[in-house]
View 1 (tube, rainbow, N blue to C red):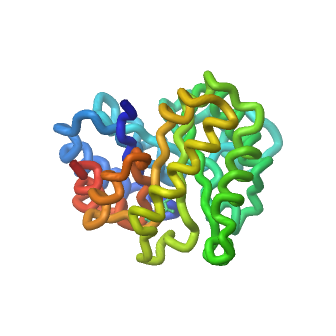
View 2: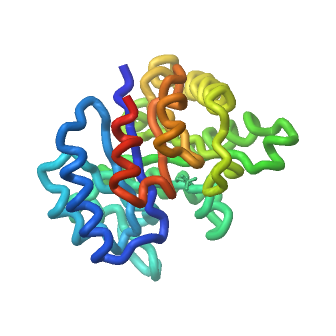
Length: 250
Ligand code: 13P
């Protein structure tokens, strides 16, 4: 019932030339992919030259962040209006790297989320706990507050354009993946939180992705879990031949 969503997050990697070469290669590899939605988030500055390359393919481009205002005196920020005008229909928001290194809070992520949706840009909304929070048994408490505050004033209707990415911070870029059971446990809790904030239909229809050291060798087992609907992939998305194996997990 939920279409799998496999998303790449390039983070701050690749030049324009490297990105163009990647997409020219990757689009050939995705031509026969069916029943999986493919999203690739690249640094915002790379998106414009890529729009024409992915036109007519099954690859959706995504930004890695957007601002909460349509335009104005916000030096260095990216507008969802501009993204939409360019033909980019997705953005990642609330990534732990933004939260930890660039002072993003649940409140600023919520404001950005509202503006993205208002402008027709769908959102991959990231949440996740630190290692010490996990060790102190505070994982559910952490994701509950991130979801509750991050989705403030979001309606049932708006939830159709939001996917949640659960990315335990201790598993990002470390090579340590949460076990499929650990991920499944949190994903099931996330659906309970969605049920209490919205209703059972939203809880069952929202896609919940896992992120944190996903690679070709572990994607199948993760995707076999009942409540894992996709992946948000950093390092293993940077080479087309690696990322395509994750897209073709079946
Ligand atoms: P890695 O796949 O490199 O662990 O990164 C995960 C991530 O942060 C995706 O957003």
